[in-house]
Image (cartoon, rainbow, N blue to C red; front, top):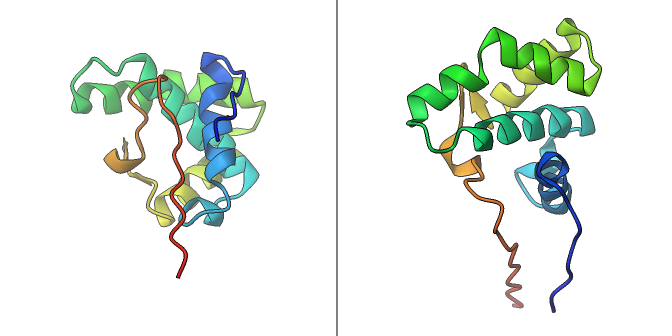
Length: 117
């Protein structure tokens, strides 16, 4: 079964997180944490051609984090709390997105394979 989903570059990452939200480990993150993680994934994707170290420096820079806060309309303390929660839940480290959670291109399909016992 294929279900097309209309999206754009900005909301794509939030939509992916929403689709994955019933599944572990995504089921552990709140709506606000998904908002912040989707912004991190979006800004990471915008510079995906850079080496990982340079991408991380860009995404976790003060200027980009300020842009994320503005886009999400949240205060610095609230943003910092969401970042701390994402670190505790191992989606990000101090200044890096955990590689297995990076989305490298937008031409992805989510495929679910159910294994029935």
